[in-house]
Image 1 (cartoon, rainbow, N blue to C red):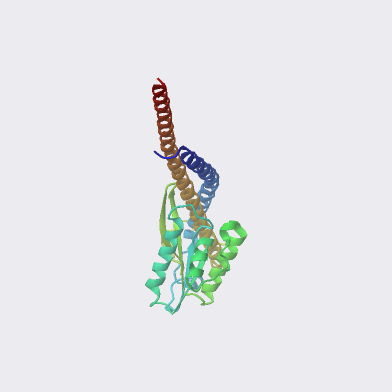
Image 2: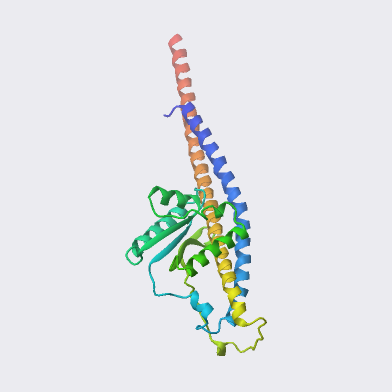
Length: 288
């Protein structure tokens, strides 16, 4: 039978760990609620933005649209990986890293140069440690999800593409399904996969002031900023949901372990009391 003192020490240790996991669960739940609200807002905003875009993008041959579409060159690829700054969120980080490495290996022969831009400390640490060619300029975005910083990031990607620094930009992230479920997703950010319905598909007649092309010149960069914001919010909601779920499971496991230790403690204590009674009875009989 285990020593009672050892059982008490272990019970105290598990109880301390339970307090930590429960606190982390509550913090993640609070952050998850806010992240979910932000995601819902940006989804609704992007929905209406796309409706406006459908009324503007009517000619695939517009020079402005052609700049953002596929090009023949396949020299430079940019892989952007959205991980978390912290752990304790199950396979959230490892899934992103694994998928990014898989895409890197798959495209290593197709592209002459592949750069990796890790967003989040976990991905940054991994790719640094394994000597990948990385860009660190926007790796700290998740520390403060500020609109200005996100728009600066989107503008950097857009200009890098237009200037020919990169021919393709892929983003690897966890898309949000629900608090307990995330799906690893690869999104082609650039070149844009533009769906132009044509002028005949838009029955309304609009008068553009200034011209449609002038509006388009402003609309596309703004749409890219909105899309990147959506993907970052998607990843953030997935991270908080994964952490909340995993900490809840850890807390439940701690509760089960504490109950089993409590039973073991009671059994050991009962055995000790029984032995003491037997010894007292034996001593009493020996005196007689």
